[in-house]
Length: 504
Image (cartoon, rainbow, N blue to C red; front, side, top):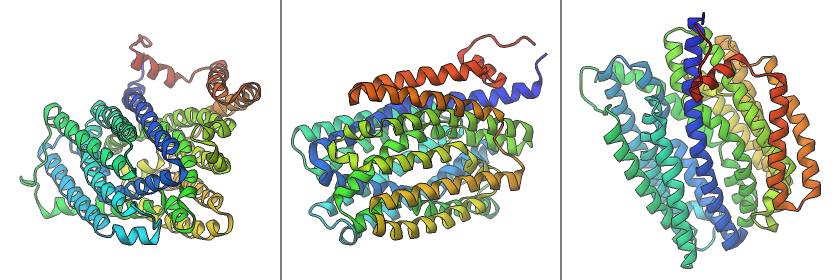
């Protein structure tokens, strides 16, 4: 007889795993597209002009953390929470959309108007002001698209987000940037092509929302009261302040490198950060549907299920990320050589960020768990404390050690911040994700790493990456299988794959 509690946990894990699977497929395509765009620009224009492109993109990406004003996370919480109150869902969705639209309009306008000031304080080079102003347009369009993506995730229809954001947008960007390079466009022409790609992507996402979802935002109805508005902003405003702190941690290191060093240094540093961010894919993937599932379980006081899902999800994230991290460290020189020989100066930066990202992934969706359990003020405090620490350490260490100092500061803060989140989840909710099963991927990694290193010693760079990845995956999987598959993993896999489960 199958326990009903186990069935509920497996159902929730299957929902999260399904979202992660769809997201991973889209993320692989998206990151491959992003990788190809950066590869084309860096190889075609060189480290200096690539640095201008990467710096402008980083500023827009950093500002994107502020423009939604906490609306995306609010949507993820409130739409599942008020599933049985459709009118209140619609009003809260309308409030989120209005708030984010005004935020996007304000921040984009500020960036457009003050682009000359930003350029004068950072990379004061020809054409950078025009590039920044185009990125302000991308910032506005992408903020609106992100509202639609959050709505898709909140109702657990992640496939529409994956299609628009992870398939359509990267393909359009590759075509646009590639075409611009072929006709000899400047950096300005490349970014203009990206504006067009973002515009088309927003249209596609809007069409999917109108034709596939039945929930519609509104600012009217019986729930359009001060109490509901107060409830919304009591949740979203701390998250807005939290995002301001996140800005000081996200890509502020790249911005500070631009202030103290050159556009070439920005280019080399940014490529290393870009490669290390591949480890973030599993965490992002499982975070897609973990928040609405966690919000529902917490609201229904199903703590045992929440604890089991937190643990299994964290272990899955760490298991996948550890293999990617080993691959990135073993073949760090070979990977950076793909962008050009001058980018190999960032090997130490890449290693430090891989280690920082492994700490990030080993703590799983702890940040989202804090937010979904009504500890948004704790999350806000985290982001500000560690954000300020990151800025101070970057300013001090960059002047002492160049961009390696930036990596030491940012990777160190990333690791400590995430360990703090795990401790806070335990302190407030008495939940932690760890068990003996975490030793399995660690032992598998200890076997896979020497195998990859031996392949790297035998073969030239590009074949070494390909063959080394195959050998590493085979060794890693063999060790994991030799220890046995966890029962919850087996049942979740059977559900996802459609295989018959255990009999009742």
